[in-house]
Image (cartoon, rainbow, N blue to C red):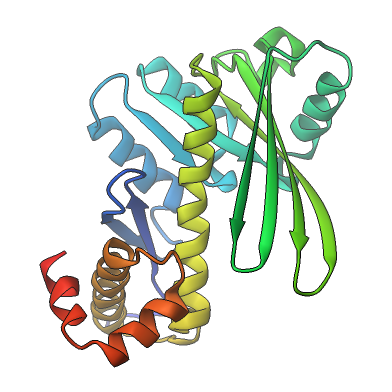
Length: 249
C-alpha cells in the first residue's frame, strides 16, 4: 500500500538576465533530491565558461568548488547562512585596498537609489581552507543609499558578493542587478499571486499551478516596459490590445 504524501513540492526555476525568459528546472519535495542538486545538474548542462548568478542558499563550498572545477563562472551573495565567510569578507574589505569602484544612480517612482560597487581582489588563502577549491578571486561590496522623496525617508544597505570571475566592474555590477530580477519575481509570485498560500499534497496539481504561474510571470516580465507590475496591470485593463503582446512575447 502506497504511503500518503506528506510533503508538498517546491519549484526550481531560472531567469535569463538579458531575455527575462524563465525556465522550469524541476521540482523537489525534500525526500530524495534537493534544490541544490537540481541547480547543479542544470549548471553542468550549460556550456563551459557560462556565467550564472545564484541565490545565497547555494553558496556552499562543495557546490561552488564543483562549478569552478567544471569551468563555469558563478556570482552569489553571502548572507547569514555563511556567517563566518561574511565576517571574513567584511574584515577584508576594511583592511585591503579596493581594486575598482563604480557608482550609479536610479530615479524612479519617487525614490532615488545610489549604488556604490567596490571590487576587492582576494584569493582563497585569505579564507577558511574549505574554500580552497572554489576559485574565489573577487569580493564585491555593494552599498545602496535610498531616498524616498515622497516620505522623506533615507536608508542604507550593504551587501557582499563573491565570484570566481575576474571581469570588468561594469559587467559584474550588471550581473548583480540582473540577479535582483529573481528576487523581484519571487515577490511577484508570492505577494501579487499568492503562490505560497496555494498549498496542496497533490503533486500533479502543484506542478500544474506552478507551470501556469511560470508562464504568466514570464509573459508579464517580457512586456513590463514600465518596470512596475501595478502600472502594467492597469494598462492591461485599459488597453486590451496589449494582451496580444503578452501571448506574442
